[in-house]
Image (cartoon, rainbow, N blue to C red):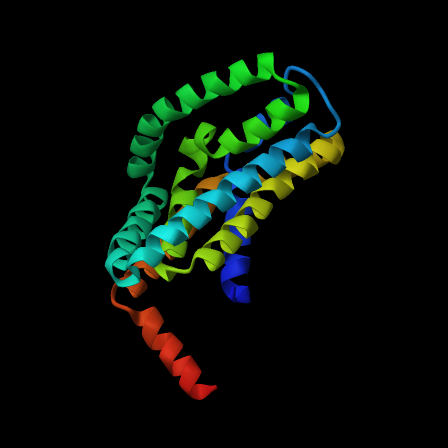
Length: 230
């Protein structure tokens, strides 16, 4: 069963992911594409939700093989992704290397755009979106996957990544169907001053704190105390 705090945190992580400075300015051209179709944004969002959910199920299945064995590696990954978000130098280094993988995925998506039906290419683009925007989404998505992997619960992992994908897709739909004014409002709200960097550092700090807490099994202790109180 998915608890409300986890679902809320993961949903907000999805929204935060798409509102990063390198994702948000690319939304209008991404949604317009080479060939317009009124259902194109829905196709992109559907593809991305399916992709994220599948990643969650796969991660949950891996964690379920040996929850105790995989808990430590997943926790260390969470701390690592949090550190990437927290530290500007680490973030720049990560983006530099991740851009190479993203470039290959972008080339592949361009080929699909040229040769496929608009809706087919939209869904395919959505499936690849997490890889195409790896420099932007990688740390947050990686941390979320690392978190769900520690649960060792396949259904819970898939559900949480579905929630993440929904949060990821919501700004896409707002920009696509809300008109120019809504897109401008999002850009003005999300990209003013040093706000994006501050949000990234705060989120990174929270991830590091959560990972360290899990490393010392404070989460298990808290759960035991909570169950005892109830």
